[in-house]
Length: 354
Image (cartoon, one colour):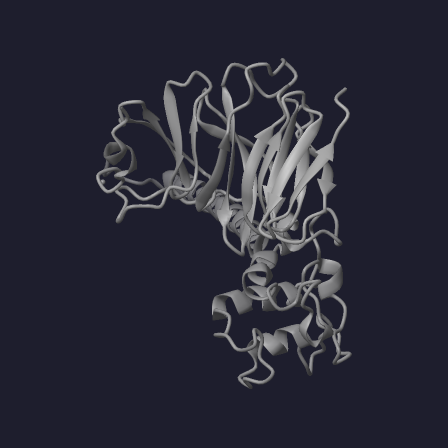
């Protein structure tokens, strides 16, 4: 029998000097040599300074997708997305955040005598005008990032300005899990390995791997804050998929209200090798088609995404649910997919298996 206490008890887991007489000729040679040495040192110093300035210039460039979009996603999207555009202003894509709201003022257009309306709203001390409304002001360091970006021309450095912010932001490297855990953690995902000899459970920014006696074997990091689904490929997967015989696993993780994603982990080196899907909210369930060629993803944004495992691309998005999609499952022949929603509605989708 599996000792559950051992499995779920995380609190125990996890610094020449030479002196010689100078002749007149020797002094001339010495002085000439010193001039060359000084010139060489100055050249090296100037080159080093030039390189440092170039590096600093590159480091000082604010990236929309890396630096600015996360600020908007964290602080602004709740009130200014397509569903709830307060003040007639949206910030869910770069295209939309560049458009004026009901005020008619251009959010990114500033002059020497004024500031961009978006920046003014972030910095003002007027509680009726400041964004975010009815919440604490954005951290000054984050406001400075936005200000520097606008001063540098408010450039978009992503692939598609109409893409939602959560998809513009590059996949991040997550912080390491704590060692040890300061408290017990709610476990929201479990799965047996393909050979049934190991148990994988969700931790805090990690996946924990246990043997059947409850002994910790591995800790796999670089996943989201909380894991909601762990899925191994069917043993019938062919060579076109990322691996066979349980050498890889997919994990759905994220943070409520901030976003979720599905990461593919290579179990030979315990490294994340791909991000298969990303979402504005949590991803709650995963299911492989019995042949392993397709992966269905159930998300809190009311969608079901179908990923082709050969190309590792989303090939279809289903939008039939009106609320969280909480569970999904394939039929044995892979021709039907059933999904459940928080609205108590269950739907069946029919597919042609090629």
